[in-house]
Image 1 (cartoon, rainbow, N blue to C red):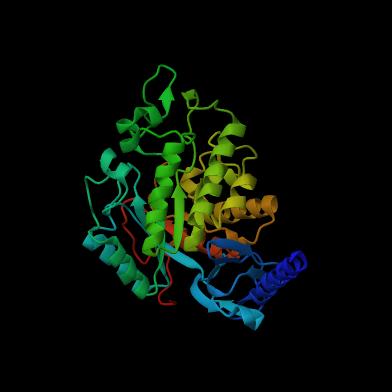
Image 2 (cartoon, rainbow, N blue to C red):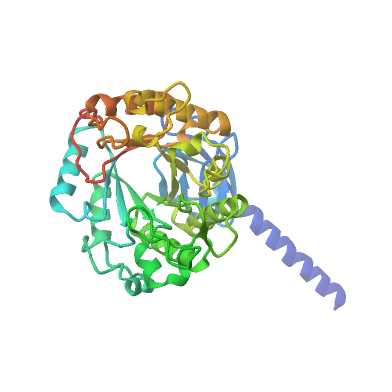
Length: 419
């Protein structure tokens, strides 16, 4: 009986091993145009993520089934089905560079502003929209199922009655959709739950230059709320989740839940982005972070928790705000930034590339499409906008995004057609 039991155990073990071997599959991810392998593509199956090697290969264990694939500079692929018995399966990704306009909390819900943006997408080579899903004051423009959104008053103003339907409509038109999630600047949550807010040394709420309170990036409850919003809109079908204000306030002398040291700040911000990557993995969405332009130049964390070399480890796209007006101190050899929009964009990106060694496709910058506020008050028109676009494209970014807080855009600086 003992010998028979041992034999039975061996047969069972062999059966399990054979099942594992039969269920093993390899995926080779290639560029649909050149057929060249894509290194660093993320292949998701059953909630697990595998990253392709230099040959574009990822080994998957299981019995086959639906997979999802994404790589910076390409359209993501959802729900491809592989046969585990087929050995190596080739998956081709279509190259894609997003050229986007920003629509605010109110802009996405305003028929006139949204219609004007969609007309520009139809008439020019624009192909993407960045949409506020959690705005600068903390409001959420759609009906959310998150309890804290209702508790804080984030649902008092609803500008989009049916966001899932709007997402489906826009994606059916081939428009790439980015959900902008304002992370730690949240006046509504900070005032409703002051224990989660940033404070001054006197104990009062910290209020920034816009009259808004901030939440504390160290607080787990704050981070969880932001990620709930991100996951909710990922389920709706957005292609990308872009975290803005993913930083500490740029003011000294504030009080947080933990000591305000550079190490702690960097750990909090990169830890949050790493957590976002894990939380959003099943949805195969791209993850991006907006950063100050000077982050590409400063070797420290700019006192806000944004240190370049740490940030890029946890996002698909880094989106530096390369507005010439925001470079009040200039950059080497260029002390009048608004007179040199091409150089500001190109040299900042070049500096980031030297520091990180990443592919240029890992960067998609914000470009200035609004009037200067820091130097000579010039309007940024066709010449300035086109110069910034040329710089981004010459560098080889995975596209670019135009920012105008009033959502007032025109064809100035854009190319007609091209979608």
